[in-house]
Image (cartoon, rainbow, N blue to C red; front, side, top):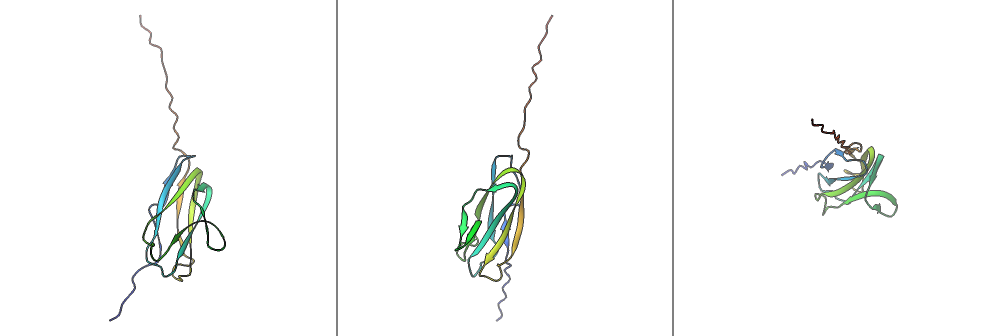
Length: 130
């Protein structure tokens, strides 16, 4: 009997685009598409006018914000919170002792950090009656 592993290593994102008003926050979730044999760090890099509202990861060396997936929690979605000051994106790089996951790049999440702010203008016209 031959057993074929048909799992594909990758990153699952709940969205690839966020529309966040300037100065506000938004979020999306991330999980792995298959069970790793070693822990997987998903390093998050914010580019442009966005900021990640997450603690830094530290696995013995200085790292920026990241998510950690293990063989026990690989399929449990983890939240990423982003604050927008303008347009930008969040990139995902995977680092692991699992050769299948190590060095993979996940899709980016684009952030439209403009708009969302509206200005209401009311015109009050006098009523003239005769």
